[in-house]
Amino acid sequence: MLNIGVLISGSGSNLQSLIDACALDDFPVNIKVVICNKHDAYGIQRAKDAGIETVCISHKDYSDREAFDRQMHHVLEDREVEFVCLAGFMRLLSPWFAQQWHNKMVNIHPSLLPSFKGINAQQQALDYGVKIAGCTLHFVRSEMDTGPIILQAAVEVKSDDTFETLRDRILEQEHRIYVQGLKMIASGQVKVDGDQLVYQ
Ligand code: GRF
Image (cartoon, rainbow, N blue to C red; front, side, top):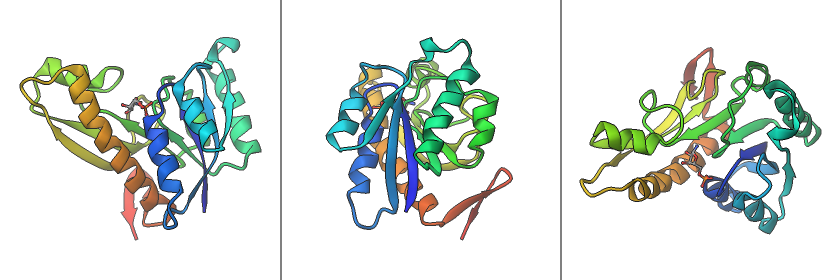
């Protein structure tokens, strides 16, 4: 079993897909703790409903980014977390935190990276007029939305798509590839060597 910590800021639908997967016999992952930086995030309720410990750490209580990250790190270590999953965690991470969890932390992003990094990636795709959007599961490096790519899924952009319709179709794919990619990692099917993915 791979013991993970999940970091969230919002609705937590990706967290929910991981919770649901963990209930299956053939998913070798255990969610030890959910850390959230927003006390009113719906994701906290999802974790509680599943009987998972939640810890709220408000970034506003810390003087700088690294101090906040060190507190998260302390909680993760204390709960014997081995691997970190970012799931809609809307804070930039300090280089220190990225180094602590180098090759032991993944993120889901709603675009086909390296296109459309940062916030509102779905709107960026619509504004650009791309015909294929999508999502990316990747290992985390300190530069935002970079790192070795584990899985991607393409989503066709329809002419009548709004931010909401495109976001929701991409989300369905996020949930799918997050579960699939994490299973590959937890079962040792894929590893990172330097910045290259190695398949066993
Ligand atoms: C997702 O689109 C994720 O890719 C992005 O933030 C959103 C979080 O959604 N980083 P949820 O909280 O998992 O529902």
